[in-house]
Image (cartoon, rainbow, N blue to C red; front, top):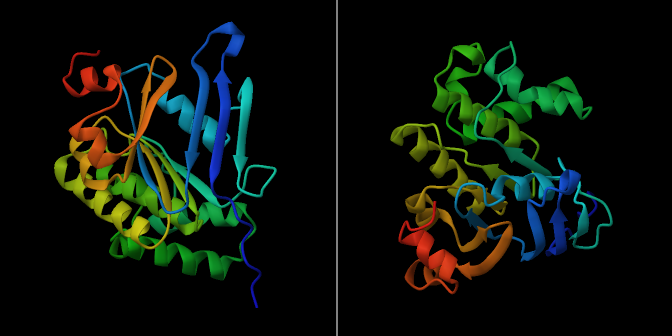
Length: 239
């Protein structure tokens, strides 16, 4: 019988700051994320959204403040991150998806099984043996999503995952994300696409000048944002 996973929610961020070499990018970030949430992170260019994602995922270390994962004292492994531009290895589609599992020490047969299942979830099982680098940009992003899904993350971070994709590829990614969320994955996504945030998000985190100015249920945010900065942003008055 498998042991119950250690509780890693709520995710508490307290007084988080990031100021490398004195260059203040994020200041006094306070945020709580509950299990099962789908959070869209919005804000103008240069606000610090992508840096926030990297801090939460553990790619960067904060210069101040804390990130507390439920009952865990260290960053958990049951998470993954998807970037704007996917990197494809010189191998097949399924080889790309299985690679992350191999690195974690998963046995070859189990890694290939989980990789195939992940490809099925994003609708790319029919391309499993094709070289990944010959795929379209949208297909490569779905391979990258499958690579993240294969790790069975309990929380998935995404940084502008559809920014360079056409509408059809964007819809395919959104469909997969909605399915993942419905099946219990907590999702935190930076996006500049207001329609995408409206379609997918349950709550909105708005970042402006390195600070979170509000964390609001999505329907409330788009009807009547609480901060002046967010209101101006929705009216396209901010850069």
